[in-house]
Image (cartoon, rainbow, N blue to C red; front, top):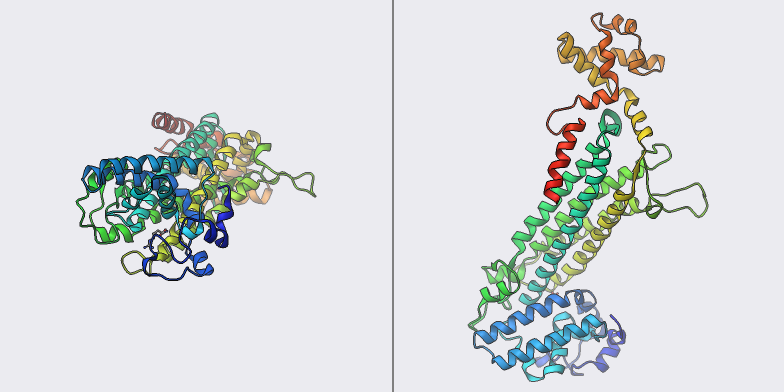
Length: 479
Ligand code: ARG
């Protein structure tokens, strides 16, 4: 927004098109102007001007429908549509004088429309209320945001896929409790995020499908006596159908909550990767190197490369989840239908959407650029007796031991190696046979991390062939 002097309550009172004694849109029975504090708490224009495109689109559809139904004349509808087009052009140019005295985007647009087209502007609000208007605008905005988010998440999946493909054979430690558990591959780990993000996208898609009904024409809360065509406005705005209950249409914000819930879960996933990146990029781990573009230095410690982008992605989750909690808290105490409390829905949703957007963008940049350190990863993969399960499995497979017994034998061998401060594969055959006499030299084959990983051929397992099959499947899906 530029030329913003009208945003101060005093300036706008003096300069706006509204009357000095009361609000022109609703002030018929009012003798006094609102107090400056009233205006400040009531105005939402600083926030909801972000819905200008949606507001104008909704109004154009409404005007055309009113004319088609004979509620207003064709000439009036034409004047309204071209006037609305001028308004949106002015808004896009940044020169639009938004006014807080006019409260919100709906009244700012209408007041300017009146200056442009005169009397017909007053007919636009026939068979409509700001209650259904804001519900339409906000649904359209959330729908657009879901579509943007979906495209960004698909790009992120492609970046993980590229990492997975390049590192399908690269062994690394798999962790449980952040303790070395079993060796896995880098490709497998990257593909885990492809799956998570696929479900995130699915949640956004589900939310979009339920959201995609038009509340326009619910009017204030009870519907209208004018012969409107809600199916026409619904389809003009790309909705699947009109909503079926006018009270519900103006009073619910579950579509925004579903968006925020999906966004929270997605942000949580990004945050887990961010946490991994913070750990992986530390001097102690050195699993990955982040690019200069996604690292920062320290002003006092010259050696440092800090993973600030990852830390901020991790932190942004707080905003997104906070918005969900904030809006559900606003909504939970409201009797049907609309209450002004609901005006607080947009700021939280916008902040959350922006935070998620940034988090996805920063994650995309880091994932694209990060370089796994093959040598360190494979060395770490074998540390911490990570192939102990392979040894136990071998005892089951080759010697027919019950798994519980094999587990115990292996535990004894791990202890023996630990006492000597060596790896399992460094125990001599004699040392192994002292614990279980039937162990043969062949056992050393399963003690290597490469063999361990290659043996995990169960569907969805970490064997490179399994991972490659998943990569191929996803390449098809993301093409
Ligand atoms: N700015 C309002 C909001 O965002 C628009 C709806 C106003 N409705 C009303 N009855 N005052 O919720």
